Figure 1 (cartoon, rainbow, N blue to C red):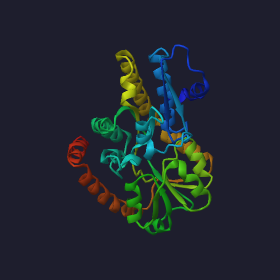
Figure 2: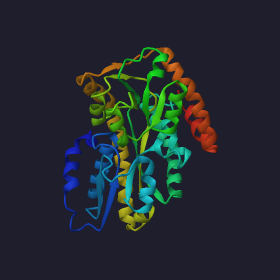
Figure 3: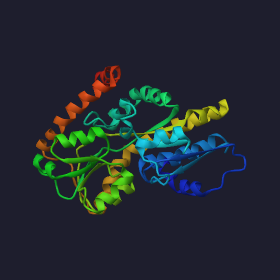
Figure 4: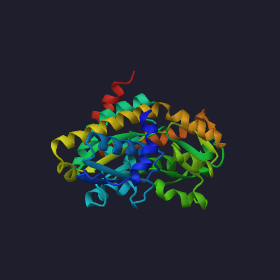
Length: 328
């Protein structure tokens, strides 16, 4: 599990001096902790770039929104040169292009296999949307399945009405609102003050890595609804990429492919690792929520998927048609 094993080395990388042979330095930002899947991937990518370019390209990752950049603002920040590269939660970019909302469409994928296949189908469309904004796709990072963290156990569909829930994009906000919850789309970096002061009493999240440690302090219940297996998108300013030599460009692309491959391998055991840590922290996991609760969410999900198809145009049939046709 190389992606997990290099975290300690990544911490050293953050504070290491730029090698004397370095020709290019890229700052790369994310709003997520280093222990979460995007943070692990960024750490791995930085190490792979350094190795494959012989230190001629150095990626300096920053985590926890220390650059002051949220996912929704990442593409603009890269375009403006505030950072050369970045990782963003794909759903947060839905206002930029409908394709970014695809990975977090509710109840579309229910397994890692499904999520991987959808990512492969969506890749050229995501790359094209980034290209229109002067950026190049580096890699996609998968997340574990999203569930509901809450203060109380959710027993019935009526319990959804008692939630003031943090959702992670416009689609999930609308799905939970249709089910009766008070839902707000809030970035991870902006969530903690609201959780601390009680403005929200539930969170839609996988609780991956140290995110789970934070959530478990306030929300001792996790309802396993497999809402989605979302993705994050890592991109670089195209002009910065084009300034590299052809050999270095190929090395960076190879580093991206290697990082993504490792992320999918890591994901296969990530869920159980997260669950083990959650139980150790006293979190009660409900693996079989009431069918009526799931049905209430599915009603809103069907409308959300239809609205996405209207927004996305031909991409809807091209991607979802191929995805459904390939299901066993």
